Length: 104
Image (cartoon, rainbow, N blue to C red; front, side, top):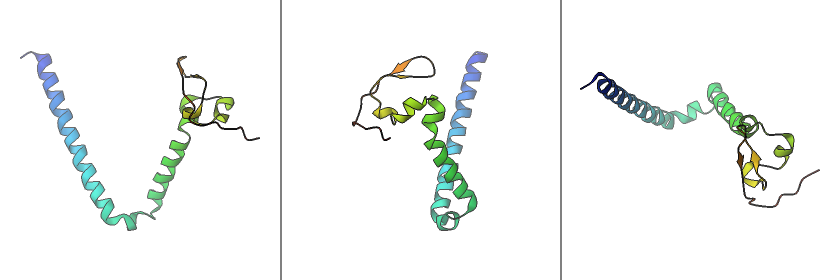
């Protein structure tokens, strides 16, 4: 086998071992949290992590798409009827799911 084949083989085995390790860590952590959730639920670190995730997911459209105030006033991307310019100059067309009136 060539050197490149050995490197590819090593990287594949290393990726498989890493994936199995992450899966095992996830299962162990999940079982621990399920058993001890009532103790962890009110902890300040848990509340901080959950609050951070909520803020990040709520502001995702605003920060990622760099939408203008006019686009933000239309609602989410799923409800926008006209093409939306993206950050790379491409447009994504969305079909409206419901008619929304603008609240003044």
